[in-house]
Image (cartoon, rainbow, N blue to C red; front, top):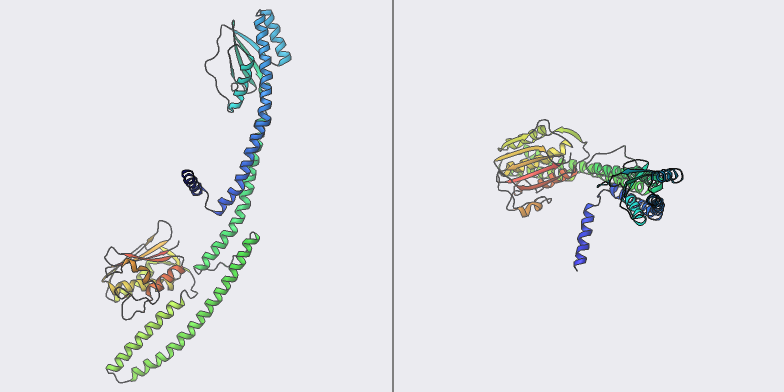
Length: 448
């Protein structure tokens, strides 16, 4: 049980540290096997070839050094040492010098690859009975080996290629270069494939926000092009549906307003009395309801995206709330801009600000940059507010909360629904929460 829990925790830990992007994961799928293969090949090379060759060379060098030490100990006279030194230089490429009265150094510098030192140390330990010391780092082309004898120290300089295989670093260099080259090629090809998917995602996101990327064309792998063609077909169907709906709404708007205009004209010509006044109020309410229904059904309507000054837009919306009798305070940087559909956003903000003005006496509207990117517009009021558990219900179309803010005689429960629909059409959202003023806070978040 404990081992299963440990495995689960380890799997979670690994999963959290894996790349989350398609580019990162694709690169990992290609690079990881290549890296493992390179490590395996390197290990096999060093274990089966380089290490074996180095051991054989070290053993041969250690044998020659043991012969030289024994020959010197058999006859330590200067003449015999001279003959020994000459023979070692000519036959074995060993440079031997006697350092009378010296002792072995106490410290030794270690090579970058510890296997070099281990191989030579093992070979010398097997062949020499006398104390010894060696250094493989002091000279680029030689190995410095010193053996303690009665008269002092025999210092022997041996060519490096006699101690170990010197071509191992070339093999490692080729392995590193090959890995870098394969990685660069993999990055180039994967980036091209991922870029096609990113462009498709950007085109889908732009279409969702109402912007049309005319330059988008399917490219990339066959599957990506197939998805892109499917997206373009879907986009064409949706656009055709929007165009048909817009034409239908224009026709319905005209058909409904014509009889309303005739009724208003007849009432205007009729003698004023209590019944005509009530009928005029009914007609005004009916006209208001039709306007809200059409605004909700119309949605974005095909309006083009523009860069607008948010402060100017908020000031225009706030004028209506001021005329309704509310005290409105606006806090927004005059230079703050956003790419939006002006009329749609103005309609959404007007619904929120007028809703706050109807239910509260003080309204505050603020616009600011978001730390995560984009902008947000905050509308606060000091009205009765809405219970937190009914926030989402307030966004439902035609929802009129009996005990809260959507309860008004002229409304039909579409104000918040229209505001959220507009915000989401821009790629953002609208959220409700408690206001510092004591009422309701509505936050419109828009992407950058």
